[in-house]
Structures are given as C-alpha cells and as structure tokens.
Amino acid sequence: MKVIDQNKSHLKSENSLLSVDNIRKDFPILDRMINGHKLVYLDNAATTQKPQTVIDAITSYYAGFNANVHRGLHTLAEEATSAMEKTRDKTAAFIGGVKREEIVFTRNATESINLVVSSWGKKNIKQGDRIVITQMEHHANLVPWIMLAKETGAELEYIPIDQNGYLNLSNINNIITPKTKIVALTHMSNVLGTINPVAEIISLAHKNNALVLIDGAQSVPHMPVDVKTLDADFYVFSAHKMLGPTGVGVLYAREEILNEMEPVIFGGEMINEVRFDFADWAELPMKFEAGTPNIADLVAFAPALDYLNKIGMDKIRQHEIEITTYGLEELRKLDFIKIFGPDNVLDRGGVISFVDDKIHSHDLSQYLDSKGVAVRAGHHCAQPLVKLLGVTSTSRASFYIYNTNDEVDQLVEALKAARRYFVNG
Image 1 (cartoon, rainbow, N blue to C red):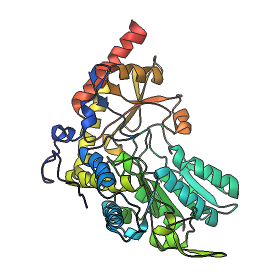
Image 2 (image 1 turned 180 degrees about the vertical axis):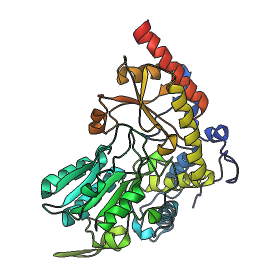
Image 3 (image 1 turned 135 degrees about the horizontal axis):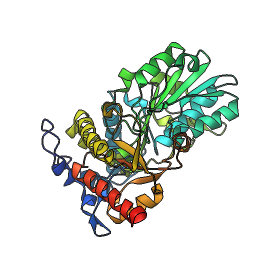
Image 4 (image 1 turned 90 degrees about the vertical axis):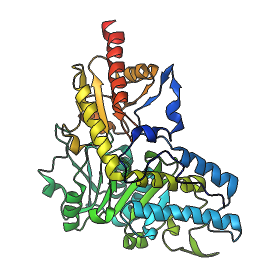
C-alpha cells in the first residue's frame, strides 16, 4: 500500500506555537497571482484551501490502491477499505471520542441534515408537534425543516436574534416546550460569526424530551468540539471547510437513535440480506451508506484531520480570535463600513460580514478581486437572516490558519481603493 507521509509538512512539533509563515508553505494555492496580485484568500467560511498532504493523498489512492471498499478480498480492496475506515476512526476521535458506529459519511453537511429530516423526522414528527430552529440558520438547516413542517402539519418556531447578533433567549421557555420534538440550530453563524450557547439549549431541550441537531459546519473547523460533552443528539459538518476535500460530509448521531432510524437510500453495501420479496439492513453505520462512497476524498480527509490535530484546535481558535480582533479593529476605522454580529470577539468566530454604505456587495467583491482579495458576497445561503439585518446582501471576510494581519491590511486598503473608485473618483 502506498502511504502518504503525513509528517511531510512545514509544521513544527505540536508543542510549538502556531507559525502561520510555516503553515502557508504547505498550501500551494497561496502562491497564486490573481490579477497581478498575490492571492489573499478570505473566503474560508465557504471552503478552505488544502495542504499538500491532502492533495497528495488523493493522488496516492488513485495511483497506489484504487479499488472499491468493503467488497473485495484482494489486496487493493483491503487497503482501500482500511484507509477509508481509518478516516472514520479519526473523525470519531476528532469530535470527542465517539463510537465509530456513530459516524455516518455523507456528501456534505446539507445531506447529513436531510438524512435526519427524511429518516428520523418523517417517522417522529406529527401534526401539532413543534420544530424549533433559529433566525440565523443557513438554508441547509432551514429549508428541510420548512418542508417537513409543511408535510406533517408540525409547527415551526424560531428563536429570534437581537440587534447585536445574539440569540434572544428571553422567551426560550415558551419556545422550547413539551410540544417540541426537535431543536435544530447552528453552532456558529456563517453570517454573523456568533457562537451560540448550544450546551444550554441542548440541556433545556432534553428537559422537554426533545432531541437536538447542531449544524457544526462553521464550528468543528475552528474550535475544539466535544459532542459528548455537549450532549448533542445529532451533529453535522463538512470536510471541505476544514482542509479536507469536497464531497465528504459527516453525520454524528447517538447509536440508539441511529438504530431506530430507517435508511433513505437503498442499494448495495447497506444490506444484510436480500431476497426477491425481502430486505433488511446492515449494521451501523453501513445501513446509511448505500453504494460506492467517495473513497478518494474520504481517504484524503484523514491527513486533513492529522494536520489540524498537529496544530491543535485550541491554537487554531486562539489564532482566529487574534486575527478577528485585528480585523474588527481595522474595519471599524472605516466610517463607511457597517459590521454585523457581536462586538465581543470571544463570542464570534473568524467571520466578519459587512456592507459599504455606497457600494453594492457584488460590485465591492469584484473590485476586491481585482486587487487579489477573495471575499464572499451575497446572502450567504441565509436569505431570511440577511433580510432581518436590513440589507439584501453583505460582503464577508472569513479567516483560517494561514491568514495574517498583513492580509487584513490588504483587505482594508482594497476597501479604501474601492471607495475612491466608485464614490470619490
């Protein structure tokens, strides 16, 4: 079996301080020139860049042990299966040491949520039951619940946000009640950056015998997450937002819940026995993983997890606090920029959404790109939230382990230049 050397990076030992300069050497795309400028990549909430070890792992699979998994007894099949299942073990360990059977691989966090809605939701949610979500949800954790409520006749109740970008919990005991069957909320907002008090909400939900699904797409890549300590029932996230490849999602759910859920996709791999008039399902987690999985990218997710572990999630969180603090300080010096989300940097992740009071966010984003600065513009798949903010779209800068204060300075200078070009020119 051709094995990628996971230590082939510029990281120092795990006990050293986070060295952004060394980290940047491991990401070949950061050397790109965009419109004559060195790339400043500030769209990490959408997807992160990939270190060379992840890129190499994909090549290693196809060049060295390309085969289908769980099916063959030959060497290549066994090597592929072993590599993929090692990723499952590492994923289980990464979020607090859960059972490997509690890790279901999907295509993305969106598919993970839809799996819960289609399997657990349609079985357990009835007319008159209550589904509770928040006003800051990504469409992935909003639209599936809207559709389930319409189909079942359940009530859809929202936890509101306040003017500072926090969840308003003043009326929470009237929102989460004995009628509530599921509470679904984001751990960290992809627009506001708000880190929500999910442990408190999980505790209240459980007192009302409700289950809780946490959308961790923005939290797992950026801070330590222990789903057992949180006592989450369902927790979802995506590999591509944490240095891994696209096409890999994770659904964690407690074993006893998964055992009660029915699969929603049927075919090969997920069966125990099939007759012409009968089928029953394989053990966890295979009953939810029908067909050939995204093997190459699952194999390549392992070195992404190794990379993050080698740095340490505590250090990653501290780096993002520092760069977000600097970003907020510098952007607040621009009197034409309005920033959304909590003022306290300890209550938010490395996401800053903002608007220029004279320039549409799409025009602003295109101008920034002309200077080599990549940000996101639009409603960020959270259209109801952005409307609540009183705008149609925002620009969003989002940080990760390879971003620097110098890049924040380049963003600020590009915003000043955009102002001169569109308004003062």
